[in-house]
Amino acid sequence: MYIGRFVIAGRTGAGKWYLAYRVSSRSFPNRFIKLYDGRAAVLPTPDAAASDNPYISYNCFRSSGHIAVIGNGSQVDPVFDKLTLGYPLRDALAVSLLALDFERDAYNTPRIAAALDASAGAAYLALVGHQKLYSRMVEAEPGQAWLISTYECTEPTSVNLTGDTAERVTDAVFGCPYEHPVTAMTALWDESGFKLAARSVR
Image (cartoon, rainbow, N blue to C red; front, side, top):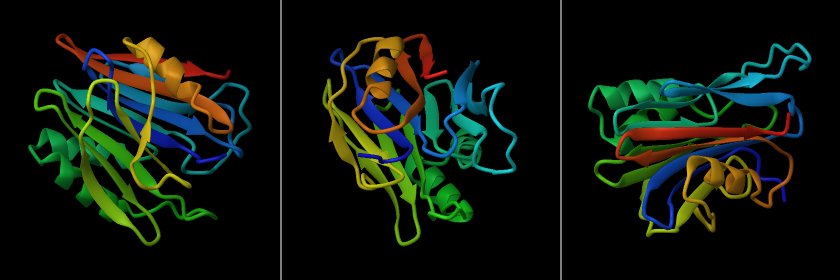
């Protein structure tokens, strides 16, 4: 089944919170996630064909301290900005997604995002689509995770992932049984901050 891009908020078996993101694409497979300090970006690979599509490259993750946001497009930056200004998770997601609205492509692709306040143990999933808008808190027991995607799984869906490090969770996310995986990343919280890992086909 093809569900497009998806975000995940969950906890490891040891109870550590994480956010994850996977790019699944039929049209633009030549992409990877580059990790920076407190940021990650989806970028075309050097061999990717030139394109003027505005949805190919974007920051997919931002963090500061115990606050983080992950998503499938340019909404990540304004959500992060509002979080750093003190907006609650729900409001930062809802306001930013409503302002940008769904992607104006041939599929009216929804914008999706997940945000986490690791110190409070609070996580939200949010989506804006052609006929849908929500910013919803999710509760996760150790070993539990919730996913939303641009297609099919547009409501929070329980998924089973294994792994106790950012690298292992990323492998599990990349290996989720959905079609056309391209690249994936995880931001795993521990006492010293968010640990990042990424994996790509290319």
